[in-house]
Length: 309
Image (tube, rainbow, N blue to C red; front, side, top):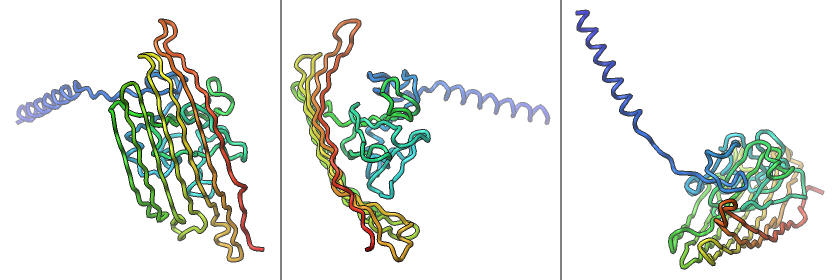
């Protein structure tokens, strides 16, 4: 009887070992992810920094209404609302918001009106991917990058002659709609991209009920065009507009029956036009040379504070 038990255990162990060996030999290779965290395009595995990447597929599958909501699940990133669902600020690894650098296509989005850090004035429908560098990066990006860097890469056409995406979403928490459309492609050396979106959301629903004066509206429009003069020389331009109207409130004032205080932030807008020229594979020592020039304006009407007289 003992010999039978030993034989059964031996056979089970042998089968288990063979199963484990056969599955260990299966190799699942993920797609290559290239990032610009080191100021030049490299494989993510070659970057000597802590970097998280939100890919085009993750952005497309997300129900996030803004960039802040997209970044909410990234480890090491904390998203604040400034009392509003439409205005998000970012902290990286506990540093203050103004110690995190925000870039769009590698170009700085500055903030001079507050100590809350730059606002994320771009719509997710215009974004190809987002790179998040966690930890000090001041050597490459300057003194604003003490906490880290968020580089938002916009869409720039596709390899196919024509591609189109459209989406419509409903958000029950704010009784709001969002719509977007994106067109892009490439043909005969040209590469193009057109993006447009609009969002309209009401007061946010919380466990305490609807919080008044937290509604917001946002709209965006973007256009990209480039042309390959040769196989190694490309020129192009990119223009985009982001416009928003945001209200902000607090439950501290909501719970006070004698207070009707809230902040109306009308027409917070970002306009940008950029030009670039890029040469690749110049020689064995210089593989890429790029020149960028851009004009960017952030305009905001004076914030209106309302309270009882």
